[in-house]
Amino acid sequence: MVTPDQKRINSRKWPKGEETDSAITSVDRQTFLAVTDGARSDLKLAKHEVVFRQGAPADAIFYIKTGRIQLTVVSVHGKEAIIAFFGPGDFFGEGCLADQPVRLASAIATTATNIARIEKDSMVRLLHERKEFSERFMAFLVTRNIQVEADLVDQLFNSSEKRLARLLLLANFNKEGELRPIVPKISQEVLAARVGTTRSRINYFMNKFRRLGLIEYNGTVKVHTALLNIIVHD
Image 1 (cartoon, rainbow, N blue to C red):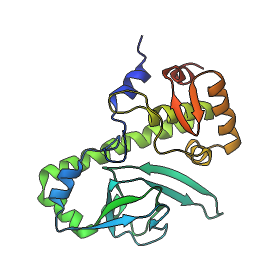
Image 2: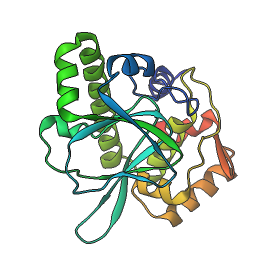
Image 3: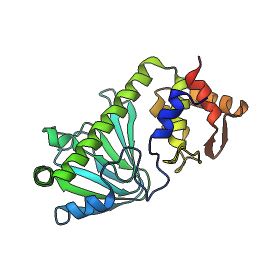
Image 4: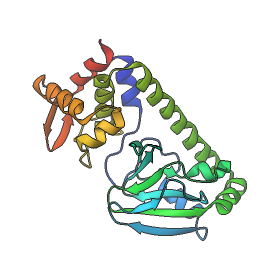
């Protein structure tokens, strides 16, 4: 029997690689490039290169053509947390469109990455003038908001073990609902930041999942569908 969680996971579009659209993309690359021709500047980033830092002026929006970007926030006490990952087809930095004066997080490339930068005024003009593009962009934002709400509920009501299982499942399903190893590799430090726990707890749960035959874990991670049992059962 297919559980509601399995249906929800299989119904989503999961990334297959660096050249494909990500899970919440609603503006494909060809559409984006055609609409923004002449209004964008293209940038190539090396791994670990910073796009913008927390506190910098929010004056542009970005679109990922290839590669990966992570958002990190540093508290006033110096504690750092990873709050989001973005892949090909994703926008980030859209807070400037709502008159956000400064960046609330830092954006950093986690692989060699190609992005497009669009000034705030140019993006506002495109959204007013290109109805189809505007509708797709709004659909993208709504879908992202749904995911943020789901992540918040997960954080509030589920244990660290369940949150880790959910994260591994989401990262392993492709858009056909098939399992494949996580690409690129995700360190335990990153998993801990995403789950909201310590690296030692992540290590404990990963070893537990491996002993139970729920995952294969040797540098890369391959998840078996039986890991769903961690989510749907107490």
